[in-house]
Image (cartoon, rainbow, N blue to C red; front, side, top):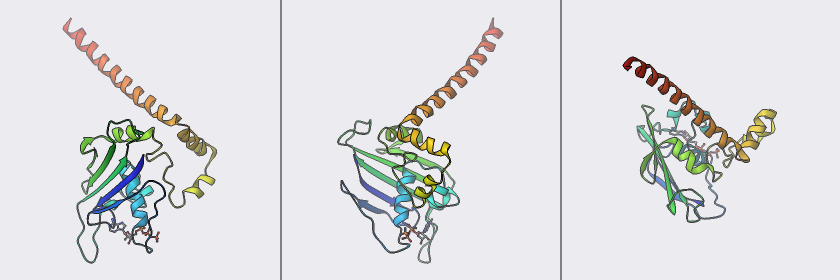
Length: 199
Ligand code: ATP
């Protein structure tokens, strides 16, 4: 599996639709200061489901939408599509190419698509997680991240090791199942009340 292409439109400094393709192996993005190199890695983090504006170097999530320049007005929607080559079937989906799209409107409404079909954030996370990709899997090391790892508390380092050892995925699934069980209990309690009223 490798990152095949990235398309940005209305994302940070990329007002116009901009596509870039990558080859297997090492790829390097070069450019002058302020030309948008870090915005490209922000776009990758964002499309993989990042929920923290701070991780994307902003104050609010809306900051990812192109806010206008002296040459053109702001736009209302940001969209990023990342295409992964999945011909080795690393991702558990029956396609040799997997396109993940995230779109966000100024209203705050966000949508995800997997190969063009509407999906939930949870679906994106599930597809990516076993591959070692995904927003919490430390496959993207941003500026300053190494320092923060070196200075982190033991509990934070433990979280990192658990993520690398694939334990946190099971913890997340357990939490999700417990939430479902709890809502089942509520439904059951309600059904019992209704049954008592009928009898
Ligand atoms: P450096 O080499 O200095 O780290 P860089 O190439 O990584 O720079 P970025 O940090 O990716 O540059 O891009 C910074 C530019 O993106 C700034 O000019 C900033 O104004 C612009 N920018 C960021 N967010 C938005 C936005 N929402 N709308 C318009 N422009 C934006």
